[in-house]
Length: 461
Image (cartoon, rainbow, N blue to C red; front, side):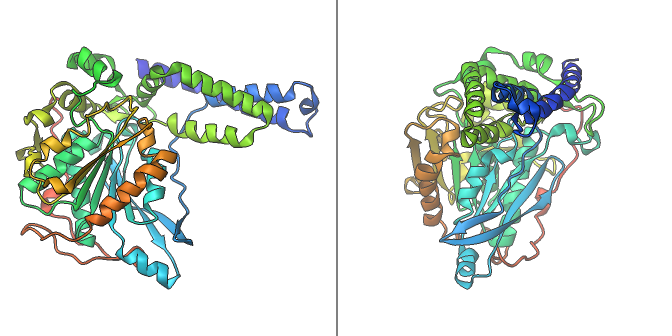
């Protein structure tokens, strides 16, 4: 009933939000008689704030039209490379008519960015993608809102997440020979599992893995997020935070962890900070500080846009990552698309370089949680491993903002460049030559083991 109550409340708030927006414009218009009153600016600012507090936030756009490559403006065309039931593999294809720039684009490394499926959309990594596009061919996992996925498309499990990542890696290998993988926060765990399984089978693995602020070992320096998962039982999560999508959506009837609950949890972690931010926004509007007000809007347009997660995936993540620590305990088995149960063995990875990144002030993934990947990947030579701790950075600072651009990205770019040399291809790897960003080519077929499968709805999380 909670989901239905939320939808009813949202529907009731919608006309009031529209009225607040209209009133804000009316009082801010100098040609309006209401705009001539002494307190017009304050009244307009108040209505504007009410509008933003009551409006519905939809999925934002990446909005990356161009990127500067060594002083040359390069056009970007965003397109869907692969369309899966619960995820789109999105490509940012670059175009240029400058011969020298085109020559650079052709030889730049290929990067798969595995975005979090933890409540926000992949657009949260817009700043990450923007920086990477200067020196790389970039693809990203754009996860779909589960309430928009029809029940006929089946359930989505943590195993499916792992298998999706493997399929995307193979797709890029078939097109370019190989790639680098960057995972941010939550996907560090399934990405490490995906590469581990490929290594155990003797497949070609990515040239490098870059893991940023993720709960590889959630037992280290536990945060409020970790404490909640440990203090509550699996049954508590299943009985208290899982609801069915109401009528009116394509995914009506699907069991999900609603995005509005995740958003409430985010806000509850720092309520005073958010209240202060909204009050500052009001004061910026009164003062006419358009730049600061616009920065606030951009942040909260992203922060307040949330998606639902399939219940199976959410509950299995809680159990596997935060309660039973299956990855670090060596007890995690993943169901492959053809129905085989495979043990995740990070120690089998040998030919993939590893870079882990943590923020000094990260209050979501505590100190040491990401670095734990080094102790698991014993097959990777020490000279191929590196760890970076970003001084003064919180969770978002390691992949967005000034610290990301000035401190983290140069390290990431250098690490990728240092490990761009191709590795010997395993017998099961897909053979393909490189292609460039400027000339589209047809990708080779994805290996049979990456094809989707239908889950039995009776499987328990």
